Length: 143
Image (cartoon, rainbow, N blue to C red):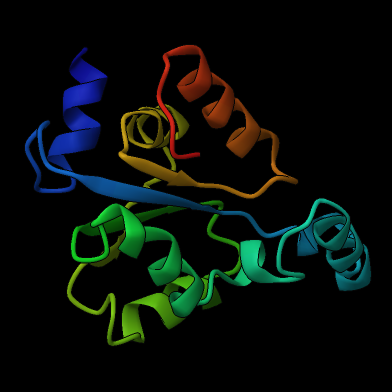
């Protein structure tokens, strides 16, 4: 419980505030070519680079029908490629609401993501898959 409070408090929110968590994962250091990632994303039916680049218009289109496009958006990340974070923080839609919160504590990242109103992960990441599975087991939707 103490760790849960720490992860939510680090965002400056209360436990009742609505928020979204995006999990950014870079696969470049593992030697996987971009063509492999594009092929897998295409096979599972998502934008070829959308779940790696997280374009702001894609995130906005996910959140707008849920009424969450003006709420806080946090990114947890492995920290290896921050280009998607830079793009989101510079976008007009998210300039005021977006923030990277990863501090290297995977447990805090996990709790923050599990408790989010919306979780946007990377289907190639085992960490994103774990978060989605926990959310599903808890009866939380919007994965």
